[in-house]
Length: 330
Image (tube, one colour):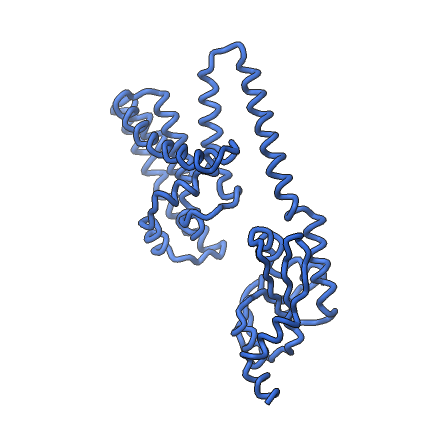
């Protein structure tokens, strides 16, 4: 994304102060830089193991929903203000309408101010574009992790800093100090909220419980997670898959890794059939031999973030659909 940004800045500068000399240099730089975009993209996909279909990315460009766009951008633009969601939604919508207005004003006035603000707006949108193209939740309006906004946030910081530069007041130092103090308050508040389900003590307590419930030396286990508080369950269990367990047990081979799934039909196949493909945190493997029902383990995350072992209940449910177990019972 850096190369397109460089060319956009150069284009804005050329348009602002038009001359044949600048056009010539801009064209030369464009000729030199543009081929680097597909080359670097090819290298990344070739040597870093990314195999996504580019045609799907192109199709995703047309999956545009204005309401969803506002929801995914409101966090980076105004989420840090702690304003009510309704206000943040409308403020983000207004900001999106301001952007084309700024472009029009720049094209008309050729002002340095409009050029810088337009460029920073483009920075925000352009660096969020990869997430929009490759990740479903980035297009659906779902809550998005802050790390996906990190580079886009540089544009927001640039807008704020540029806005502060216009404050001609002897109190500017105090204004900046209070602004930084407010950000420290927001950061501390967010971290305190997250500490209830992302802190090391909470995390270790959950995975110590799982480690205790699974017999030592058991290979080929299946883990099932449930819980009403989806957000807490995501961070403590779902996103972790079974990797913390593997680290605790010192598992090195992918054949040794347990799998995480709530697909009872797949679990029934693993119990009854040979050569079943299963997904582990380190890649897909073929399970050559069936596993015992006792290798299925289940936990429910309660509201107080305590894990309750529900293996017996889930095993009873699996018995009803695993044909080999039905045959044994009959």
